Length: 172
Picture 1: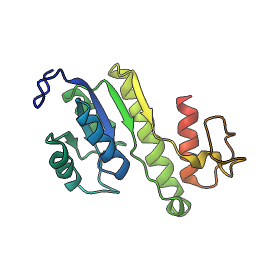
Picture 2: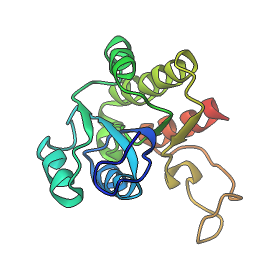
Picture 3: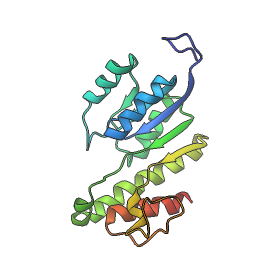
Picture 4: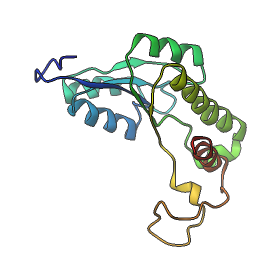
């Protein structure tokens, strides 16, 4: 690949799920600025399509974008068929703790089915690099602060936290 702007060799393609959200969009900008070929899948349930325009305004590069629900495995598979992806950074999830208490089934279905679909598609498409955005909520009430990777994982305090804990368990 040739990087259009700097004439340097383009780095591998990276898919950022939830790439129009706050953390996702900042990650997309950084990846583009580092020369990666970046693609975004986001169903816009917590963000807006105009974020893609803002990313382009900041970087001069428009990431490939699909308004796709990750629970629609065939749509994600089609996106991956079209776009060369060697890594996935998975930020997309329902994330409101209070709402998860009111709508636990929706949270389990969205957050876990989307993760399972991506894991299966990684295997099917030989994508060996996967980053999962977990949450400090998997530690429950921590024994000490700041929390580090050696902290004990405690029972989840909400369905949202439990989806992140289960996601960690699945990937482990």
